[in-house]
Image (cartoon, rainbow, N blue to C red):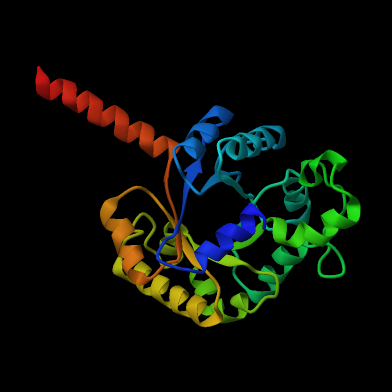
Length: 258
């Protein structure tokens, strides 16, 4: 069983049995360290982080070397963007800002080979540089990585049942920051109206039998609030926030000791 399918099985158990963390900084050793610290998966942020393709590949390799699954969030729902990321042998892809069933279907089709999808054929690390025979690779390609769509807009919430019905979708993940912006509350990701939308997303995902997660920072009260709503997995904390927390707490400690 692939690492991706192992994680999917754990996600289906619920109760946040799968925990991920985010990486924005470009040094691959950061991803290796985060993986070593015990995260089940590392979310390499190709949407907001300043990564090029070569750098992304180094992060994917580093995450796997550290013992975690490598998830990459791509910058857009575009087959030409998605294709080279899949060739890196990732364990999961996160496609942002999915608003409709049509967009969800387009995203999933970009991830799958014909006849199920439109993915072009050119695996590199994905088939271990040719060491996996072509037919064996093709037989296992669909199960080798998770296809996760990000729900982060009120329009997506309105279309959530249709989005969840798309064949080939493995899981969804909520993005509270952009979700708050879509209802005129940018910067208020813990507003009750955001949690209200989150609850609707989670209820729909449970009904459809699809794991649902959330992407948030390392604030205890926020973590608890989403866990209480019944999310199945969580991507929480990131390299930048941990640097900030560690630096500020250490500086405060020294100042208080003077």
